[in-house]
Amino acid sequence: MGSVKTRRMPRAVREQQMLDAAVKTFGQRGYMAASMDEIAELAGVSKPLVYLYLNSKEDLFTACIRREAAALTEAVRAGVRPGLGADRQLWDGLCAFFTHTARNPDAWAVLHLQARTHPEPFAAEVAAMREEIVAFVTQLIVAAARQAHRDPDLPEREVAGLAEALVGAAESLADWANTTPGVSARQAATTLMNFAWAGLGSLMEGRSWSPPDHGRESSAP
Amino acid sequence: MGSVKTRRMPRAVREQQMLDAAVKTFGQRGYMAASMDEIAELAGVSKPLVYLYLNSKEDLFTACIRREAAALTEAVRAGVRPGLGADRQLWDGLCAFFTHTARNPDAWAVLHLQARTHPEPFAAEVAAMREEIVAFVTQLIVAAARQAHRDPDLPEREVAGLAEALVGAAESLADWANTTPGVSARQAATTLMNFAWAGLGSLMEGRSWSPPDHGRESSAP
Image 1 (cartoon, one colour):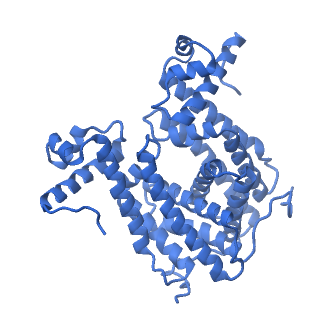
Image 2 (image 1 turned 90 degrees about the vertical axis):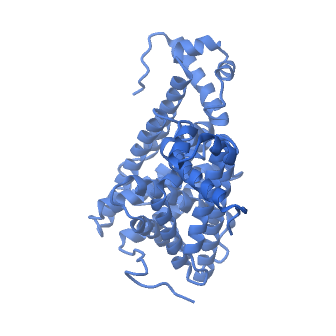
Image 3 (image 1 turned 180 degrees about the horizontal axis):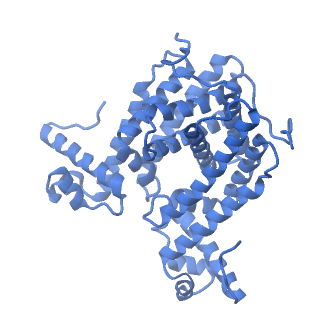
């Protein structure tokens, strides 16, 4: 499904090497601080060649975001087998997500920390990827609700909120796992699955938490 | 507890007006695009006065982050009454958080989108605030575990992971609520509380989800 169309293999290979070097440099030093000299040196090519192939620092950064966003969504989709139960699909998706972010910490930093806040078009590229992942998680939650046969009509807005919560939790845990020694992808996935599934599982069974004003009060001392 | 020491009231008032204008401008246009001219005009003062009081664009941005980070953590702490049950404390904290981020969307954009990825010292300021909130949530989760008397020894790393997940989910939902028409602070808090508490509640009662390899398999088709 690769979108790179090329007749001359060497150029494609070299471009990937430049992108590898760029992802590493942008991820570790940030967009502003990263220099094209550094990237060219790390890629083992001349700076003019980087400009010839990728045009500008902005276009190079955009190419990094596109490649890494596609790789991350592809990793998550590839990790999930559609026929299985919703909890198994979510678990497999989380494992794939955390494995990918752990193996590609610079790419994750580019996507989550560097690209989101820089001016357009960078933020829009990442927002599109995030929307795709949120949509995917939304499907899983809807499937889980159907599977439970308890609340097939879980309100659309509620599902959207749950998907946003889950994706935000996953992003936060990926940062945490990548900066906390000894936390494996599997541990991060287990923590989130426990949190998310036990919670979603309760919701699907109709056991929700009620705000104090509208329902039961919590125990006061 | 304010750290601004001043003998001349007008200066303190003017500084706050400058910071109000700066938060609005940085929040809506981003750090790079925001100009000191714009900020001075919005504050109704001359540009030299902004420089005289706040020194530089960088220092002004830092002052914005500090003020807004302090206001957010203070709002959350003020919303929570320590004597109540852990679920009630969490609910009150979430309501306070989403109410504050909904009322101060520009401040939230500065803290969550603008400050995190710019070079030091901005990112460090926000990281410190985030750590404080994570520590606060960690306390609540530990208190909930004690309260449940089921798993008072929930492993430290597991609690840390749950707190990161919860804070990440809250950040994501705050962005979502601020960009989705008609989503109230209460709705965002209810969604997350349902997600988090039903999940944490199950965990506290010893009902956790087990990965397929180590425990029960999900239903395959």
